[in-house]
Image (cartoon, rainbow, N blue to C red; front, side):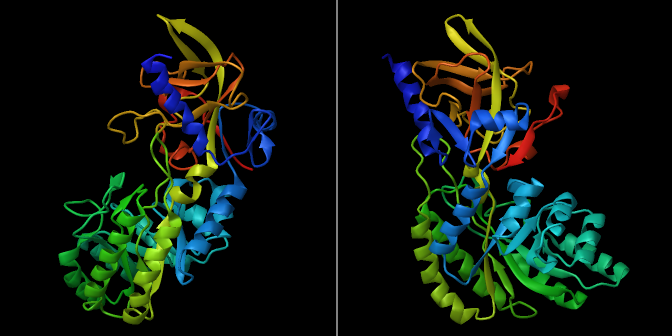
Amino acid sequence: MNRLAQDNKKKATHCEISLFPIENDCLEIGGIALTRLAQRIGKTPFYAYDRDLITQRLQDLRRSLPNDVSLHYAIKANPMPAVVQHLATLVDGLDIASSGELRVALDTPLAPEQMSFAGPGKSNPELAQAIAAGVTINLESERELERVARVTRELDLEARVAVRVNPDFELKSSGMKMGGGPKPFGVDADRVPAMLRQIFEHGLSFQGFHIFSGSQNLKAEAIGETQEKTFALAYRLSESAPSPIKTLNIGGGFGIPYFPGETPLDIGRVGEQLERIMTQARKRLPDTQVVIELGRYLVGEAGVYVCRVVDRKLSRGQVFLVTDGGLHHHLAASGNFGQVIRKNYPVLIGNKVQGTEREVVSVVGPLCTPLDLLADKMEMAKAEVGDVVVVLQSGAYGLSASPTQFLSHAPPLEVLV
């Protein structure tokens, strides 16, 4: 085997991180063989999310984290209504980032008081909707505070607010840094005390703080270190608060493995570290509900993207599998959603997971651009026209984060099974 084939052999081991069972060399989603599920849905491409895997992830978290820590779901990770409805039966609250997500959240059994609205650039109509619903608004700036106060007076309603803090530290080894340094998110920590005084002057209902430093982290020690700093900052800021802190949202940052060499987050270790931190927090902030807000970690590994091979071609010695899906449905898998150096997502032939023959291929979509690439020179089972290609780790930031209108192809379906 030459070096290129050896490198691609390593890439093929992506399938080993899959949580889905394999029966007769066919992937099963929600206990259903992928081929049968495709028949049931009626067409490809589609996204499928496994209800039991989502439930199992929440159960594992409950066992690992301190009992008095609340778990919230960040809808932006996957806003499919059926997924959100299912999660609403498992979590303690929801976080939204738009009026569209607000509508999905308000359709669940959870009370508005268990929801928060984050994100810069909220419009006045969005603020009015959140205030009318009774959702907590995470304030991102002093100007947003003034607008909330004005809308509150116009509606003659009380507004529940928290301050999103841009801390003076970041989550080390995170895939995407959300705090530390100049950021469009939150209020710089040193400006928060003055803002707290304004909240009191405007008579707004102060709920607490949202302090989030980064996402997609697989190192328990880095998460624990950041959580310690987060609580220390909360203690300091609480001295300037207009009333006791009711809620402290410490974000999440829990990652999932996507690429070769990545190992799953040691959630047991995360829980042990947080329990030590909570021992002091229970004394210093006895009336505060601590919240961990997660998105990708709850749904990312429970979802797959499925498309079908429509052509198989050879170009100057390289095999291409042309499918009916691509970057317009799954931008992240194409490498165009934040990757500096493109890496292959875990991709396999869903109805021939191992296969009797294997080969190195590239999987591309139907779009007229070389960016439409789902797998680049990966080893997988030899596929023919009609076989189904599966992109694993696709339950978060998949369809909703993709340019579905590009070239006007039909959007894929989504199912929860």
